[in-house]
Image (cartoon, rainbow, N blue to C red; front, side, top):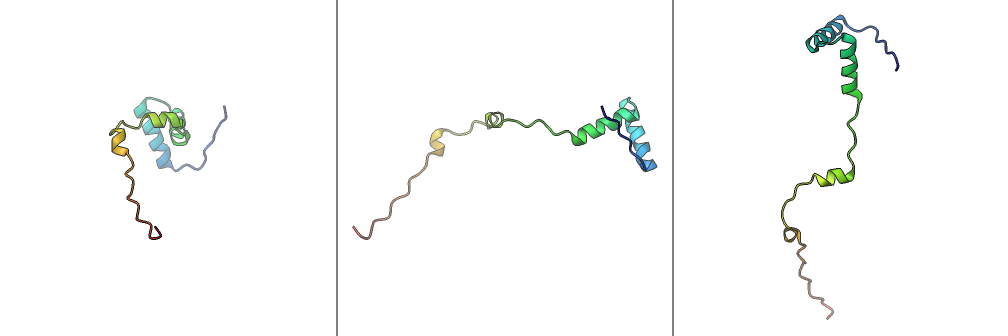
Length: 77
């Protein structure tokens, strides 16, 4: 694993990190890792099949039947 050093962090930010870590019962370093992970990890992409399977069942096939337009008479007939 890589090491990450962050310099010149405002004292207010550093104190807020320590307070947040304390509320979660972990070290400031662990809280910093948690914040970075939440901010930078992208959610797993879902497959098209997964997305398609989550579309709710609505209506019946008849509700979506195409209505054919009346054809205009051909003026050359």
